[in-house]
Amino acid sequence: MAEIQIKNVAKTFGSYQALHSIDMTISDREFMVLLGASGCGKTTLLRIIAGLETPSVGEVWIGDKRVDHLPPRQRGIAMVFQNYAVFPHLTVFENIAFGLRMNKLDDATIKERVNRTANLMHIEQLLQRYSGQLSGGQRQRVAVARALAMEPDVILMDEPLSNLDALLRLEMRAELKGVLADSNTTTIYVTHDQVEAMSLADRIAVMHEGRIVQANNPVEIYRNPAAHFVGSFIGNPPMNFLNATKGGKGKWNVAGKSFSGPQSGQDNLEFAIRPEDVTLNGGGLDAKVRIVEPLGAHNLVTCDVDGSLFRAVIDSDSKVKAGEQISLEPMPDRIRWFDPQTTLAVA
Amino acid sequence: MTTSSPTVAVSQPQKVVDARKAGSLVFAASVILLCAWVLVPIYFLLINTLSSPEEVSAFPKTFIPPFNFGSLEFFAGFSGIGNALKNSALVAIVTMIMSIGVGAPAGYALSRFEFRGKAAFRIIILMTRAFPLPLLALPLAVMFIRTGLDDTIVGLAIVHTTLALPFAVLITFSLFSGIPVELEEAAWTLGCNRVQAFRKVVLPLVLPGITASAIFAFVISWNEVFAASVLTIENRTLPAFLLQSLDVSPLHLKFAGGFVLVVPALIFIFAVRKYLFAMWGIANR
Image 1: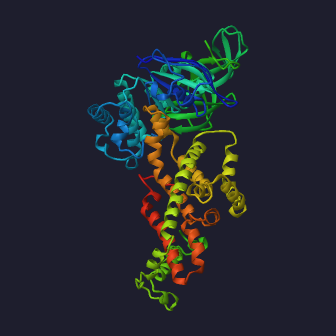
Image 2 (image 1 turned 135 degrees about the vertical axis):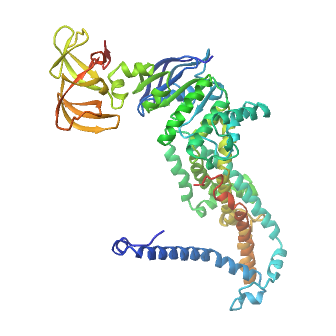
Image 3 (image 1 turned 60 degrees about the vertical axis):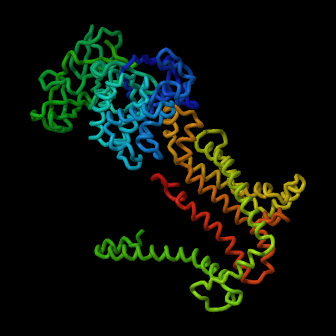
């Protein structure tokens, strides 16, 4: 049982506020991904949970134990580092056995556990090698095996795949998901790669400037961004945003067209739509095509709508060419609205 | 390593091979020259040491030493040599222990912790080398006599430690900085406290570098002659003893003395040479 509770945690480095009072509960065996651009505080938060950093204020609870005053070794965690941190002076076997030896397990148990986790990560033939003789992907496997061998309540991962090349990353991602699902541990995974986050997470916490902007399951994050930032960060290409002015009760004018929207008191809102949620139909938004990028499965069309940049994903059979005037009709149930002042979503 | 000029390479591409060949020739020549610079004097030292007194002043020299051990035997029988040798070794060992014992923790602190005045501290460490020893010798001698440290192994070792310490601190600082802090952090998450993580992870990785820096301290002490001459009377180290007695000795004995002084340092460095190079695939910076 390892539920993680983060209560009002903040961290300042000198005059720089890295984290602003974070509150978060991660349930037992959940796979939580902290997602954000570099410098958003996600790694700091992970290191606070690990005990490598102390929070300036706030509490961290793992299970029913308050841990923010405990050193890392007393927290029941294991961590996988971005640069693997495989000990270069020890063999792969001794690397995986390192934590078990520190816990004074007997040799038979150590051998059994090292072999089991090595098999799990498919590195059983590398056990007698040193780190210098391994590829990046193999080192990553050793680092994960070393964490798994501890049979921890919580596994913390700090961008574990970011140093691997693209193909290997894809392979390791799928493998990690399977291995961690079987291991019954609570996992917190830090990444800046949204595809990685979407594919791995039970729940994603999107972080921005030291705050958690939204924490929800991947589909919800994608479909219903809680704030402008989430919509502009998640999705490739991200959401399109256009200015909307009030045009009557529940009616909003966007680029010369009228859409029904929230019954809000404001005079201005932000209209948002994902690039794949528009269709090439008459009567939609007037768009002047700037660039057409054929991507195989579909075409990415960059247009100018009402003086703003607007991207649309359309079928690759379409004959749309640069310079043309087209009409893009948003799917009504996919339109989202944001308050330009608070940047939060408006229902 | 290339000495090709770009203009030649552009106008006549086939010449690049020649230029590269010439470059490797220059490289080889430089290596040979550098080796000769170090090895030839040592070789002459060896020949003269192993020659009879008459052969030392003779010319031309023989290429193969005549293996006449007369000078060395006489030198070994010289009263006080054994004692001086022992003193030298003791002072050097105590210097080595003290400079690493103090220098390595300072280097670790400099590389791992942020504290006020860190940059200034590093400069000050270097500045200690700016004081000429002769300037300090007189007040030091007076103070040592007052405290009873004069003419002792420990007293001289303390002076030598102050000479070797700046290097020990700065070398170990760069050594520890070369060890990723994540390795230590990984050890902490795997059940180690700070001391255990240092002992099990950092120490094995820096040991070759620490050894190198210890040897450096040893050699600094072994070769130091000024403080040794001023601060010791009865318990002279080898360089101080030789300075005193060889000044008035014949040439062949001077060579023998030089040989005895050089060889231990050479042997010591040769014995631990592998620690001075790479180990476990990590280069020592």
